[in-house]
Image 1 (spheres, rainbow, N blue to C red):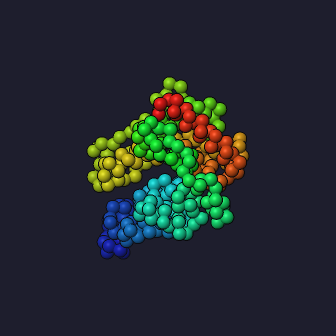
Image 2 (cartoon, rainbow, N blue to C red):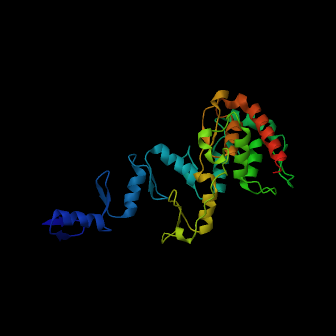
Image 3 (cartoon, rainbow, N blue to C red):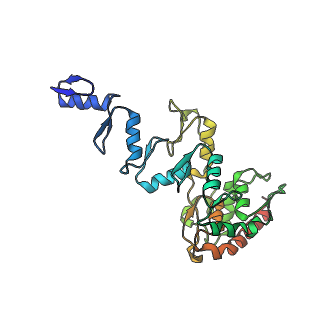
Length: 292
């Protein structure tokens, strides 16, 4: 007869004991490590603290490797990668970066050293806002091309331009695919209609929270879930740092993210920065001609 020491119960067979361990809240087993914990919180603590596991405690989700977990932290949470610390809001992360890292609070960019940060602070980017928005009825000026593109992608411009419109213009005029990856631009190619807009309904309620059917992340409100679906979270990485200009080949979901990467001078693309600004100038001119 099998016996459970923890629960003080006898079972008719080893199989019955095993079923008890699987179904009882007093047994929380890590199958990979063959360890049994008294509470689910203790099991989650084990997953969080053991290098063998790549686990996000906030989302209660496992990942294949450390790289995937790190990417999840950066995409889904307010996370400082160098410090390994989570924050409750974008503002708190911003304040942490401002106080603890080589970070420009105006541009919200990181730099590898204090000298790089000071060089950036002395650049024309901080000489004042000099980049005009090409949108109809918009008179705003921006300190950089990246800031302008971020404004357009945000959907807050009076011209009502959206991230999808920016992607369509980039796809149309980057004919040499200097910064765009044609393999990931099917929706924006000839005859394409742009990205597919996905909206969740009350059917996304899983009994506890509203769940994203793509990544299974959970949200307290339906509006928050739809905001997530409207974000670039599940977009293809259609932009890339051009290797042909000594770039690093890093891929990005938005044009503004690529622009920020170039302007931050974090890779050998620095000498391409002027060409990138010229490219953005051409892009915004094309937006004007299109009446955006």
